[in-house]
Length: 111
View (cartoon, helix red, strand yellow):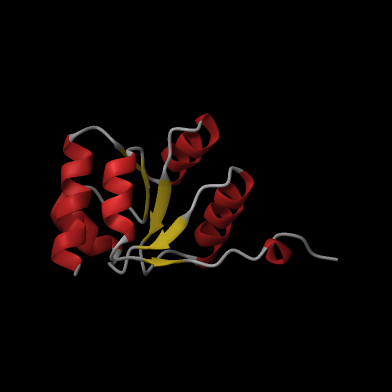
């Protein structure tokens, strides 16, 4: 599974349809170019919470990549735990093998 996923991610990056890192992913969600976001398995809880908030706010699906940041680094040459896919075809192919991350709106707001 991970070989196929990283192959798609690599092709997506070469096509210029991948936003790496939290800030670039947030911007892609905000401007509407992100079809979906993926998060590495060893992403910090704080970064994951912020990504969930952004994805929920802009109605962007969020999936678990199932790979660590170091595994992404090995394949892409850049260490990233958050990626936004900006192409519908690549996103459709990725979602066939990845698991969605549930977003609960209540975790963003405390009483």
